Image (cartoon, rainbow, N blue to C red; front, side, top):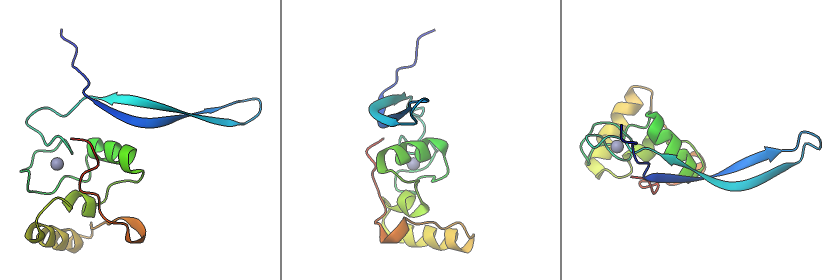
Length: 116
Ligand SMILES: [Zn+2]
């Protein structure tokens, strides 16, 4: 069987703790991620049209977003690439359902986190 090829690399940091001293050291590292299958959105690994919101709840989107941005994605991030009409519609639906979330402390939503 042919090995799938990892095409995405996500920067991260590994923390080592010296068990004797408790001192932490931090080293840069990266981990490789398999991309979603071709029929799925390459940003969130969900099936949707490009103009529609990403699915803020997929593990793929959450992990890669967190790695690149340093905080979990919110629905405001997932909608940030959409046009105004789409944003307004989805924000209302998500708020009505009690599921709306947005970045903390007035941070701007991130439309493209460098993956996909
Ligand atoms: Zn998506």
